[in-house]
Length: 276
Image 1 (cartoon, rainbow, N blue to C red):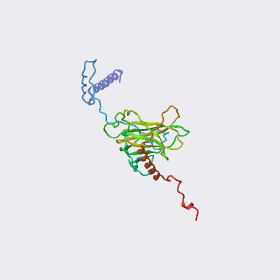
Image 2 (cartoon, rainbow, N blue to C red; image 1 turned 180 degrees about the vertical axis):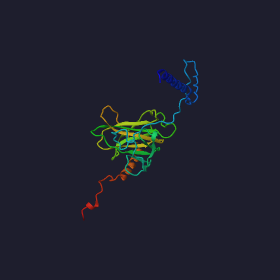
Image 3 (cartoon, rainbow, N blue to C red; image 1 turned 90 degrees about the vertical axis):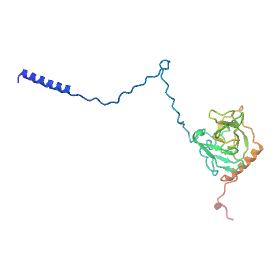
Image 4 (cartoon, one colour; image 1 turned 30 degrees about the vertical axis):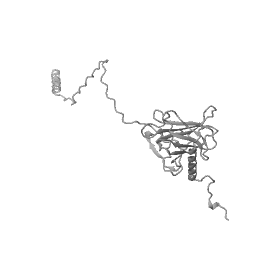
């Protein structure tokens, strides 16, 4: 085949490819029709658009520590995490009726409490006894307990809305009263009232005795903490009224009756008694 013939053949092949490509067509990928974007409505203030509606809040999320938020607390169970149970047993908190009879503690949970997962709900006129110990090395004690009116309605107390209970620091065994705590003038933003004071050093274990006032309350976040001595600090000194002392004596006897060994020496094993 001559050079001219080869050139003609190559030109024919190229022409055929060109025709085939010209005849072939690809269908476009199907797409949804474009949606028109509404033109923002101008308010006349620099071209700003309409403000979208504010979403409605569904819930609040919070984190709680069920193991106590104050590691050096001298109270056995200041935040009520382990004491909500029947009136039997050895617990950090014990509940009592106005007549001094043991009561089971009622509980509230979750967001109603000030801290942790549990707090106590105490009806008006009832009492509480909290077990604790004393600070070492002759340190003073900073004592605090928080309360809030339970349920709806305006807090009682008139000009002193935080006068919700009488709280005393006393010796756990002797019930000798060191003094009563004082409430703050007004509750915090969440409605909780702090009742607090400073107690002298003690060589014996200290406890709290509480009598609730004229309305049901939530009780939480009680602390008994070591505090460096200071001569200028106002110490607790208010003493209970005669009728309160009488109730204290009843509660003291109830506690002694439920203690494992009572007020005397531990019981002796009869097998170790000498034969007569």
